Image (tube, rainbow, N blue to C red; front, side, top):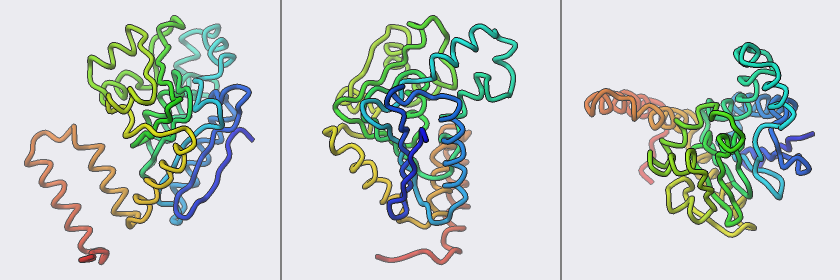
Length: 249
């Protein structure tokens, strides 16, 4: 199976496990990621997700064979909704992005193209020193896809996004932390442990409170003004008091 799923307390760890392909997003792996995230979202015993890759890579992007087939089929097929379409490839990371659960990427090696998107789809990234963030789309002669430009620009700002997208800058783990692309950079043997430790903090929070707080974080840039943001938080904070979770500790 190209995806290994493990439960650690209230944290579910998804490990892309196809090292011979450097954990490329094949159709089979995409299907497993989608099913695993849907199962986690539906399971009240899961409070957070960690996504990582079997060494030596985090995820090398979309499977080259899939991309070649899409190139041969042309734009008409790419606009389709079947599993062989570009949108089907996107689901490997978009389903993670849509999860209401707090998500952490333990980036233990190369995160390339769609694999970079998978890391960006998570709320938080912990980078190993061996991590490499590489857009690579333009060097392959294709336009970035799957919301890559939007996600990257939001994570690092327009200049760093331009450097990586247009000028081919590759970023290692330490530089990723400097740019804010990763929350922190740690030694390779600590990256998964650190990611799980952070996920455990999120998973310890009442699940409904955490998922609503995550929604508020996601919506914050689109609030029309500060008063609208206050109103949203007032409604959700009042709801949380009604749940009986409040503790003075």
